[in-house]
Amino acid sequence: MDDRELANALKRQEPYALELLVERYHGPLFRFIRHLTRHRETAEDLTQQTLLTAHRKIGSFRGDSTLSTWLHRIAFREYTGWRRKRRILVPLELLRGVHEPAYAQIDEAEALLQKLHTLPAPTREALLLHHVQGLSIEEIAVVTETPVGTVKSRLHHGRKRLQEPDSPSQETLRYDKQQ
Amino acid sequence: MTNNNELEQGFAALRAETSDPVAAQKALRALRQPRKRLDWRLAGIPLAAAILTASFLATPRTSSASDLRAILDTLHASNTWVATMFAQDGKGQEVVAMQIASDGDVYKVTFNPGAPGASPANARALALVGGRRITFLSDCTVIDESAGPVWRMGRAVWFKQAPDAIIDDLLQNKLVTNVSTRKSLNDHDRILDEYVVAWRQGSTDERSGRIALYTEAGTKRPVRMLGVGGNSLGLHSEWRYDDVPKALVDTSIPKSLPCYDLAAQRREFEELLREGLSRFNGKPHVVGVWADHSGSVTVMTSGDAGLLADATNGIGITGLGSGGTAGFAWNSVSVQDGVRWCVPTNFQGVPTIAHTLRFKERVPDQVLLKVQIWTKLDPKATAVLPWKGPVHRTYSLPDLFSPETKPYFLSEDQEAPGVKFGN
Image (cartoon, rainbow over all chains, first blue to last red; front, side, top):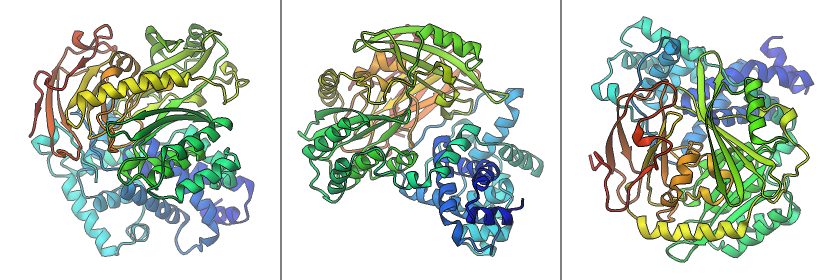
């Protein structure tokens, strides 16, 4: 069943459609929000909220974009709402530990995630949507309600920033002031 | 990460991250009950409470302790399990802390109806308490600062067996991979048996934390089990209720089980409050630094306000704190030993901040902590704390921070070795 059929099944309130929606999209949406929020419990909550909103509003899905783009757009709104309203407190992060082979992949992910979170939020969001969520530039423009040219620019400069060497302070101490 | 290849590897690693099947199941359950989900504000609350809550919401800046008491009384009378503590802050304003357990989730809410800008944000927190849906947590962590913090404390489960038998079962079922220590504590006539455990999540991710088992006063029946831990990335996670074999859980115990001696809680809470207010009022500083035998170090900083009174109640034993978002762990041994010092500074709304640092695999020789105290008095205040210790693998920590050693706390005019405030 492709996404269009899934959307139609959701509109018809077919019982199996919910399960398929969660099976297909809970993981990617959770990953997206987790990377943005860096907080598992928040990501779980926002992912659930995203799916609930999608389920409630499926009638308004016209098929102008793909179901994936539409869901990401809802998720992105949930995330921006959370970001706007959350308390501004300062988390404490510690310097990275010794690398262990078994943790190599986790380290790579976390290292990149940490670096992503040193970038401006719009740049980080564009990079995650493109390189992790697999959305096209046009789809990112829809999700973030941003012109295509701006998305391109953010991706370009974001990649460039990511490839810059860490500054000494980043090497020894991560201090991620929340935005 | 200076070339494309490294960057792509990093992105590939991020793409490999997946969600928890349990979380997906929870989402599916919520989707299947959309009506209940959407009506969460009224779920489980009698109409009277709903009306009270609504009137409370509609009364900005006139919320009073009596309003709160009325609503809480109604909640108590319903099947919503609520434990509350009332106290006065330094200005004579009433402060309420309460815990709510429903659907197995335990929450803690603190707020001060007398704080500047208290309503309607504070009232909203209360309404959300009754609502008890998962968005409760999200919503309450983003409410106005004056409303105070909300923490998800962990999961409450009632068990059929004695603590040791439960642990044996968990080991046998491979739900935990290691049990390293056990400690028994007496907490308001409830015996707490606490186990430090490790469990695996996925193929490489080992988490460690504590499981606390309470024995109900009089019956010796274990009534509650809480687990909390962090993974190798420093992320907090709960040891999930859903992980517990259903055969172990005693579902016959109603949620309205009166687990609290509210009067005793209130007395102790007030005592702690007075002491805390007199010691720390208004001074941004490091309240305490301690490590525990699961490889975590907690740094407690005062905000310009806060509330930490976990030893005054049973549930909060697993953790409490805030480091920007809800859910940071504050572990129980430290809490038991140190709660008397981790009490509110004042009640302007910003919580005391507990930063829990979790080490992956080993504790490094030296850690440079940079603590920024977020406070209205001095938002830029920082403390730099060099911390030395040997490297261990199996949840051992330096002698200074051994479980047998009391946590290291600072009094108002002390500075920890190496701690310097200011940039």
